[in-house]
Image 1 (cartoon, helix red, strand yellow):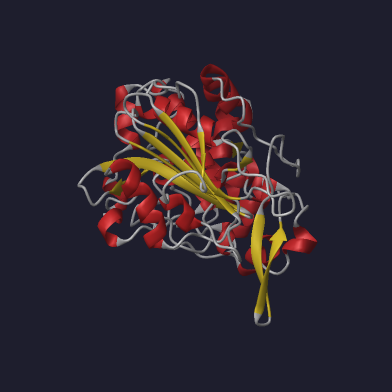
Image 2 (image 1 turned 90 degrees about the horizontal axis):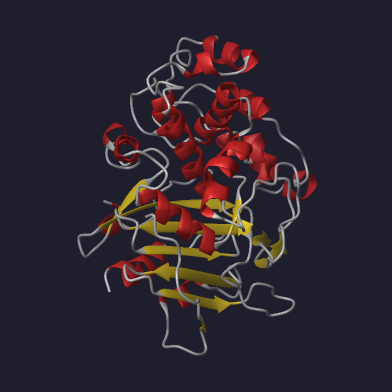
Length: 379
């Protein structure tokens, strides 16, 4: 759930499946193998632990971990540890919305206000700048709508110095949208790309209005259960991670010193459809492989998901492309929320997959992150 920073953080050289994980997963601790690029993601003061799980086109699975999942016990991160996946939630939301489009239950080019609860619809229609935002523009982050996480007061309360006092606060989707609409849009609908968490909160509301069920229910029915994603869940207001899990940390500065604050428990309703999901590396690879391999969407909708025309090549619909130094392009999404950073990527056919995560919201340096991705996909 990226907040005030850009979604794509890879350097310019890298910026621009039906296949489940098979075979045994053999952990490779950092002390047992030649230095892995994953080790460069770990920092004693900011990132206690990191891990990656990959599956190549032949089905060979490799799991590498560095550092620790818990600074008190020293245990390593496991491949099936649960963690907060942040904005990877958006890829699941986009998949359901495109399934509804394939079922002719929505039109991507219709104004979203006509498919929202009355109060939220009225708030959007209150301004000519927001009244005609379409479903497609929400999916591609070209709506121009202000991201509620950019609101200074909200940012302080959930991500900044106010986190300790507000970590268990509940937030409704309508309240999040109203926070966004209190600010002018970034620009007219369709005028350009600007990543906004508000877009996907509205899409979550759309799913409920169209189906009569919450986005969590529809994702469970349409994705989690068919793919047997046993470690993936939508906690709603529940602050505790399901077992097994390590801890989640956030570096906190106090004067000239810094310490790691444990931020494992929090109320994820502040993220909602933009980033509340809990998952595992195993599940994320299985999901992305199925999605890119054509198991979840008809060909037309999958092509639309990877169409980055509206965003100038930066974002499709719940997926973004990463161009590699070896002239390959992979597709996926990243996620950031208090105490967690993750990215999941795959080749266009979904056969070669990589997911990696940190148990900290201290984002990795671009060079270190680039080495992880290039080492996997460029050999």
